[in-house]
Image (cartoon, rainbow, N blue to C red; front, side, top):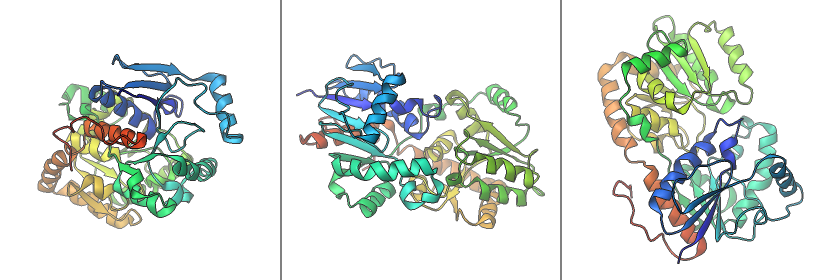
Length: 386
């Protein structure tokens, strides 16, 4: 029997149209689901999506109308989201919190920063998550965790039973595997003021991303390395502190803050970097790790949360609180060509284990579990990892 699934796409408009992690997740997962599943109907509800599959339809939910409903959900928990949305058999809420609904639903939890590192979360967001996530998890028929690390955190913090959680890892977009034309790489580098070899890091300018420690490590390196440090990411909570530290350390001529970079330009920036450094204190998954490995760039990253799970043996690790250890790890990669080659080769193999096709299959399985009708009746992709 065919079913109808409503997918919440509101988060594509997060931060003024610059999709955050939830937006990237929606943009990659939805096409993979539609390619995999031609049996069921999909209602893409919220922000604009342009589906090409005949079994998918977009239903907008924007403007003052949307803001009014959301205010009611937050303040009085009524009316149900089923009223302004098309009818369905199951909801998929894609970003932590589920509005009131009478339908069974699946919710995606991207990370547990608000539980494990509340000091890294903007106060208003912290209050919102602490208030609504526990209730959402209690009501959810199935919970999608983006990593085993996140799943274990959900179990520890909220007591959700393991059989109600499906781990659905993310993947890099295929564009990162495409060969980058040197002329294109040069043009994009020039656009952002890159005029020499560079280290790359990617992430919103906010405390959790740990740019402060990376800047301290880079400052200690600058006397004997000529590379620039390129920081790709939009302005987040307390981004001004990052800018002040750059000035204080005298790094204004060596550190480039690109701001938001269009998706189409990211592969060239990744593939052109001498190394990718990911110093985050905590990640629910860490898609940039896979993007770097897919692009053929050696990875140096933190040894915490999900990073070892995602990067495996294809990265060099450091303690994110140890700027000296971070500096030594980066210098080792810069100075050792054979190590870089090994990391690049291992990175290609590791990244190939993660695909959006596999993520779609596991997601569809979560939908069927939530409906109580068993696993998805679709063969898993051949590249799936057991």
